[in-house]
Image (cartoon, rainbow, N blue to C red; front, side, top):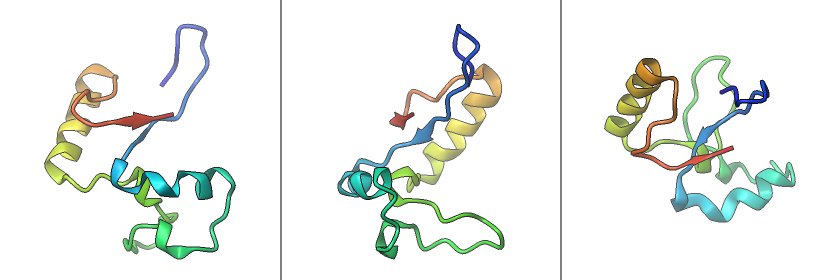
Length: 80
């Protein structure tokens, strides 16, 4: 999303159940494969569990909300 200065930020959903993995991600320590979701879809980069939405209804609402408003859905947590 673009802020008022024209700068673009990347926002990710935040899953607090996996908050203990944030340091590994910040340090780029990807040796522990348990920090990733078990999703395997052809060509998709691994998704850290801390960024994964486990509530599919909330995920759908987040996408619909963003399409309509261009803003992050307030019903889930976000990290930049």
